Structure formats: structure tokens, C-alpha cells
Length: 171
Image 1 (cartoon, helix red, strand yellow):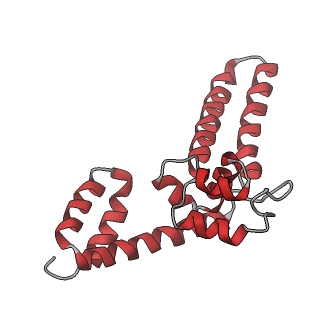
Image 2 (image 1 turned 45 degrees about the vertical axis):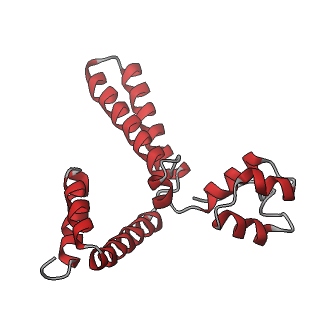
């Protein structure tokens, strides 16, 4: 996503490198606050902004993907409204078309949906498959359990198939 506005207080803080190192090592926001004077909320926002979309999903924090899914649902509802308005008055049809157009516009313009965002998500997915393949080499039994879990989620069946192909023979 494109950043707007002014840089955060953490980004402009003289000890930014030390703050980032502390966040990476798992130091608590409260502990960092005590030696920086920054607010816990500023530290939290900064930490979230540094995470990849995949990391945000794994930690169940708000992510671009969550917002996109909700925006797509809104656009789908708006499309249904427009389709039901076919037999309504011209004014009602125009309103339904406007609502759908606005929902789609949000998806395209305000969420930064573009080919590069999809490419980044794909690269992260492939890196995840590679990491899981490394895991498979070290723990075949754990990998079989992971494959069962992935197959329980139909959306992840392609990921499970890709991982199975990466398993060592006989695993």
C-alpha cells in the first residue's frame, strides 16, 4: 500500500535502529516505551506496519487480505442489489449502479490492489512452501500431520499438493 501523511514518531526517532532491534528480539512495547518515551500505541502501529501480509495473517492481526475480503463481499452485495434493481425504477437502478461502482472503486484505488501486490503475495506463498519443504526434510511425521491439516481446508489443497511434491521420497 502507498503510505500517506507524515512519518511516524518511531520512524523519526533517533533510536529507530535500536527500537527495531528490540522489536525483532521480542522486547515488550512497555519496556521499549520506558527507554524511548514513545507511546505503546505508536510502537504497536510501527510493529504492525513492518510485518508482511503473510505474517499479519498468521498472527490474526488486521491485514490487507482481511480488508480485501470484506470489500469484495460488499462489492458482491452491491452487484446483487444492482441485479435485483433491474425491474425497479430508473432512479433505483442508477443508485444501485452507483453503489456497486463505489465499492469496486474502493477495491481498485484505495486498497492499492495491483499486480505487484499479487506478485508479493505469490512470492511469500512460494517462500512458505520452500520453508515447509525444509521442515519436511527434518520432520517427516510432523509434515504428514501438517498435510492432513492443510487438506482439511479446501482452499489450501494446492499448497498441500505443492508441499507433498517437495517431500523426500519415502517420507
